[in-house]
Length: 205
Image (cartoon, rainbow, N blue to C red):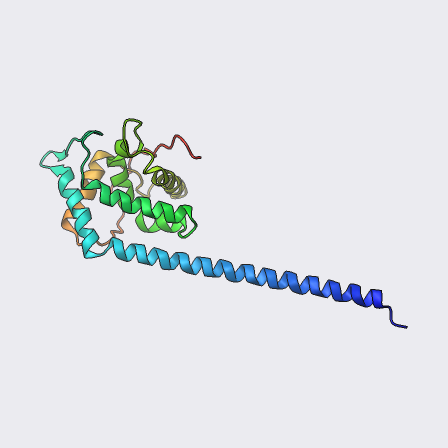
């Protein structure tokens, strides 16, 4: 005589195992799709960053920040207008990171050497309580802190040899490079170790 309860139990167990396998496979496929889209999004952002239009935007910022003495002074009340379009690009990246469309490590690897000197140069505009733009750049503050932490971890694992954060002299060097290059990323070992001046973030919420 057939034990239908046993048959049903076995069928139920098989169904559970099959369903679990299907869910696991679907999750894996979803992760692969998410990773693919993140890479695709990163490539789109890098293409825009290296486009003639945005290279010209970056160059205008460099021109507005330098004179024969080095960095031009500015105030929170009268910031360099040319900085906003560059900062807005990085704020857009930070929003994509926040929404899960970009990985912060990938953004660090691709954009950190460009974003950090501009961020430090414009830090009062981005972070000061006296600035009208602090809330506007809140996601950028968060992303920059995450990338600073990645950078400092890299410095520790490489015994401080990897160039890191930014002094005024390095910011001048960055802007000079923007003026004299075609906007292509630079991948060179720096001659000096810089002072660690990680960006502040008063509210991670």
